[in-house]
Length: 198
Image 1: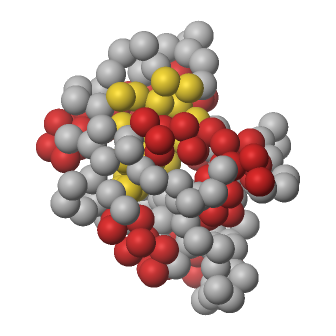
Image 2: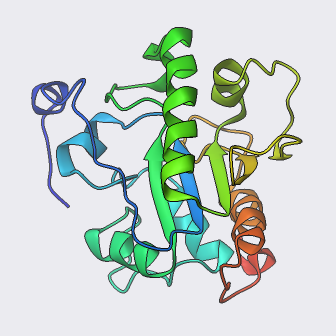
């Protein structure tokens, strides 16, 4: 895992990370925006402190890492594409924290996400974070889970954000939440999420 100084990471502020999407995508996870380490490595959820990869393992979407490293790798991203899973973001520019984004950016991100769904036609779109979803979709009372309105051709789901700042969610609860839209998209799971300890 490459190491970066704070100054090096800051140099990636406002950088973008290309969408991860392949032919026949069925499920798209939507992050809020890339973090600085993700922008530096160009690997979605590349920060080893982020719980996205451990939650995907717990959900049965990815295999446990052979080397024990917690962060996503290029091999993991290739596996997701082969399985029909993509990753995009509501806001493209990288920041140190998601709370640096303005509401107008999130609202604009909704329009981009609608275009993305129309273009790629996944079965399911799962937004990682209820607070960002409420702001972007002007839905202040929204609750997690499948949303009543679809996003174009896709079922729309909201699941917990895997950031370590989301103290309410454990890896086990994230895994269970991510398994639901995966099943809805027809993604086969290798293990039940309740087998993972928090």
